[in-house]
Image 1: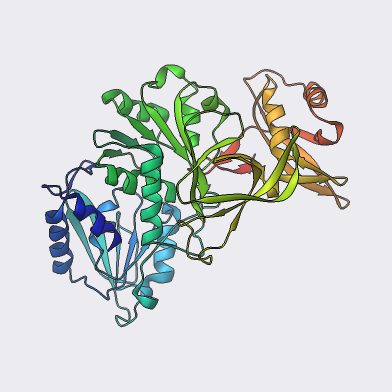
Image 2 (image 1 turned 135 degrees about the horizontal axis):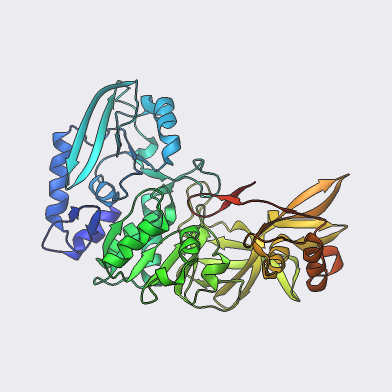
Length: 451
């Protein structure tokens, strides 16, 4: 009852309004919950029913999360490409499955469309064992990884996602009068905590854009209405920053799920960057610039510590970063510190992150940061993007750099090598540098492939 208890205390006089993918979170109260309760009752869904929910096309999942308070169910947020496979493999686990678009479900014995408060759903009823219930009657929300697109092994409980949303609300400072444009996919935990829970707590109004968007289409929405906040993956912000005339400098841009790109960093826009992971939840929120490695101010109730000395970067000691958070997913013991896989340092309640442990290269016994080499490569005027990976030859590790040229002109690799030698210690200079056409990214802006 975590969600409902809080939102009923708000005591708004009107129910929630959901039209044309605009969610006005300032307009719901007790009547909203009663209406949903009657709806589910009519559909035969009650306590003990195994309900699976897959939402991608329509990101307005908040009505469902709130309305299923009294029903034992599992909620799955999957990438669209995984949904059909998931249904085929797991359909016997659920009494019914709700999706926002019609799936090819050969095992479904019943299919009907549902339109409630403007939200179109498709219901599938499966011939399964209706006596089977989740262990302990608990509900978990399962999320996909922003890095791989594969489902995580563990889920996040109702309390986890709620309290992370509270932290986002307090850290960002949403107000009831705010209009928010969201481009974050609902399969990502960052978007759920920011544009569902945090916005709902503030009573803000959210306009959702679904699926992959072009910069031109995004700008159409931005020009039609003045938004206070735009929530988007760093990849989108980087694309928009390619044309400075397209962006509105009066609003704030909220990013999470991947590091900011170079164009975004140098745009002069007011960017709020959220640092964390699917496993730990939000760790820090950055509202101001304190250098290229600054990740933000640690949010309330999260504890961060530096453990093992990892190495030295730009004459600064780096440590392995560990976090203890109330937003940690259920795969970890409560109260344990978890390694984030990152390295960096702390300065009171500010956290600085330089890179990841798996991006450290052991060159003849010396630790080399792939991030440090990438930063140097990006300073070269002929380099548009850079990625440094660890490779091995005859049992020895070395740095291999991949770069995308800026513009269509010629790129002299010998000049790039010389540039690295002038700005890096000799053992940090990459052994190989290759020019590639582009890098491939996930929807949240993380690099997954080089070509």
